[in-house]
Amino acid sequence: MNVRWLDTVEMAFGAIMRNKLRSTLTALGIIIGVASVVLMLQIGQAASQSITSQIAGMGTNLLIVSPGTRERGPGGAQSPAPPFERKTVEAIERELYGARVAPVRSSRQVLVHGSASHQTSITGTTNDYLDVRNRQLERGRLFNERELTSGASVCLFGQNVVDALMPTTDPLGEVVRVGSTACQVVGILAEKGGSMGQNPNDVVLMPLKAVQRRLVGSYDVDQLYLSAVETTPASLEASLTQLLRDKRRLRPGEEDDFRIFDMQELMSTLENTTRAL
Image (tube, one colour):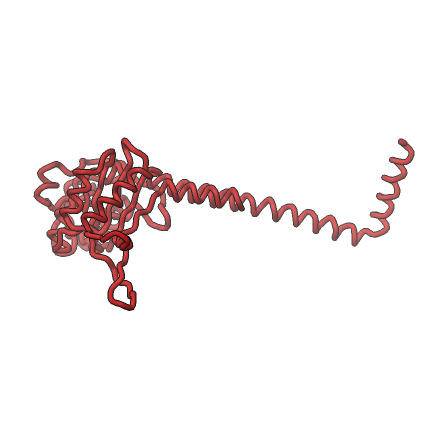
């Protein structure tokens, strides 16, 4: 048995030596093939982990609610649905159990401080925005109740905005022109990694009523962020859907004119897709 085994090895080695070029090309093909498979697996896993991390950074128990589209006319043409009215937002805050709600009204504006200027997104919201969106305050303070109620012109800066306008100056207490209104900086947001193609550090937060009254001239809300605190996201989504349909006067059988994105469901779909691949 041992002799046969040694003879087989000797014959194989001899065949390899007699056909060096063919043997080398065969071995090279195997090495490249295996390395390619391993590399593709590693790239896929790294991409999946990166996307999962970004979604988790936004909050895995987060619901994002936006107006959708609705049919108009006999041809079934689609048109943008109206934003959420103030009374609808107040009903959600009052009636939904186990949820933390952060209404948002956004406006893109040019900020000016001295000779420096910077264009960015202004987010009008409440202090709950930081908890719902998994954000922290690095320095300064949040909005107080009087500022939220009156719509005072105060703001929280992301680090990119600080670097663009006041790279060598302490921004706390500084007054910056936002569009046509002056705004005092009262807090600096802690830096955060990129989130689904967006830069969370290039943002300015202001009280919701300040943006509504001073920048957009409307008390409507164009987006809602909800965090499931004492319930599950699925249960919260079901209650929210029914409440929105009632407040937006949608008849039975009529399609929703709003969209609800469940980040937990999105993460689950991503994990299942990655596992299948």
